[in-house]
Length: 101
Image (spheres, rainbow, N blue to C red):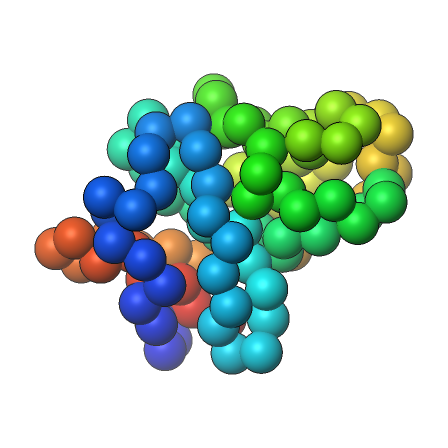
């Protein structure tokens, strides 16, 4: 595994996400009550930036149409999206949030 720093813990407040680019991919990195997750940033319904959605209880809600995705697996949990998004391994080392793409 090759983890890459994408943010600091302080840059992503609880309940929020941050758009990052790593390894040629645009990802959304979320802080759900101190646990960090990374997903593809683009909603599978109409391409909304998931990083702008709110996250809580292991779920992120799309900011445009309300589709919901599991932060751990990327699985779709609520319409209008019909396909999930890819999830990536995340680790926190010190204050660095690192993602393996």
